Length: 73
Image 1: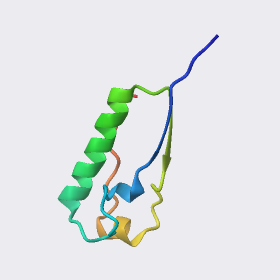
Image 2: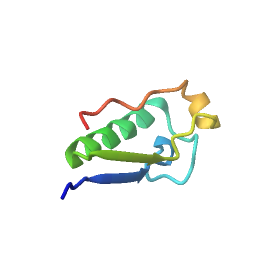
Image 3: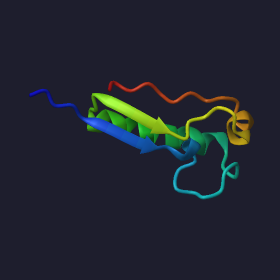
């Protein structure tokens, strides 16, 4: 039987654990995305489903569309 590791993760627009969107600078936002990427690398999933990565947010526009770092998933 084939087995797959499936990971689903609500990345909360990259803001980390803060409930406040848009109150953090670009550096913190990028650091949060790096942490997400590292976690996905460690989990080594076959399939990843990310939620709340939409690009139409004021936060995303404010931070000029930083990209989620590539992982070796």
